[in-house]
Length: 102
Image (cartoon, rainbow, N blue to C red; front, side, top):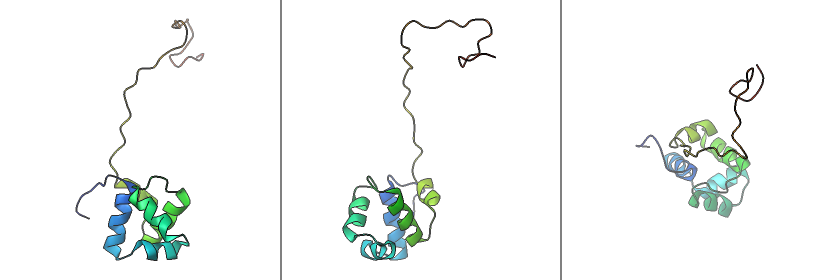
């Protein structure tokens, strides 16, 4: 595994499978799932992969889910302005910035 991050969960799982010499068929046998379900999840980059199957595949590969997720690029949140309904509220004496009382 040359690079530190992969684009998708499916990419990471496929890299680990290749490194361990495991096929989707063998992984499906180990976790008790249909081969097509494993292949489909991997081909979609992990989209639609249930948590149960993800954990099972990780166990079959001898890695923790955290190790797999740690190989993904950081998720960046969008900078979306907050829209307030109605009139903007002015702070009254005794209010805190979070809107509650002191």
